Image (cartoon, rainbow, N blue to C red; front, side):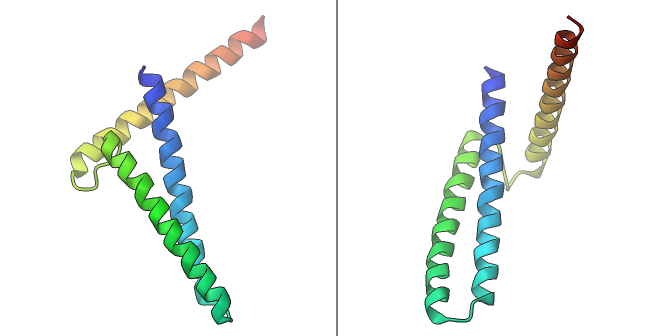
Length: 102
């Protein structure tokens, strides 16, 4: 069961990273655009990207995977996630090596 939660957490974290990147990209594109029509379109897309990022952030916080207001808890969550990832990588590596020696 812990394995599934880690997988969901990693997927949600990746989505959040991509959503934040989208917000930054739209904001940058707005500052670089030359025409009002393009700026208007990009501003609409930026608003949607911000909304999407907020939805993902809320989901992650409700799951307890991120706590912006409790740094000690967040540090412990990050350490646990890192250890679980390293353990999973080790198991995958061992399985791969076992398969290759057969």
